[in-house]
Length: 218
Image 1 (tube, rainbow, N blue to C red):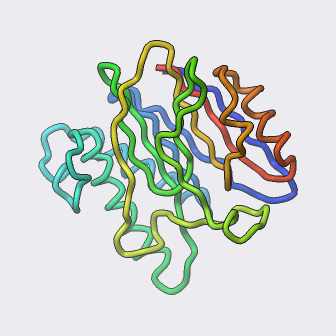
Image 2: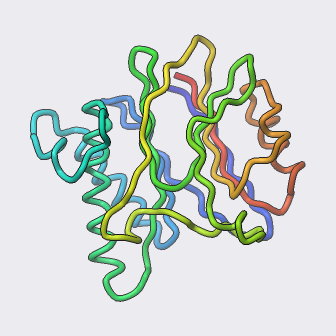
């Protein structure tokens, strides 16, 4: 797995994610904390612990796992359930102090598996251009503001709804991850898996809107 990433800051602030490649299961974990940075680390540690549990039935039965998910996604979902409970009860019992956006992606036998709550957006880029797989807008676009406004994240509710699914990759496909309040039309016109050109298309659209972007090659 190869990942190239970039954070871009304008006048508004967007937190940069913690990115961890769990090598044993070849899974990429992305956690973005909107509070203290250790909240993202707590989430990564809990998810990683569940990923490394091979035979423990709790790793796949804790909480409601995504319908039809494979064992890997089920283990990640179990870790997210535990992380959500930890942040909700420990950090947000009196007031909202913690919220973590999270995504995990893995490719096995040419099939991309993903699970997330909140940013980033997940897209595939190939000779046909950018194809959206999962779009996760925040509330800033709805309110017409430049500063990102969190919509969904771990720790905000007692139960955390997640998005998950699979996508069969073709030869030459790259995965593109973007944390930005919205994606402009000129971004979808890009056809090269080039971090600089993809980033520049976002800056050309609005140089004051912050973002994080990554390109993953499997």
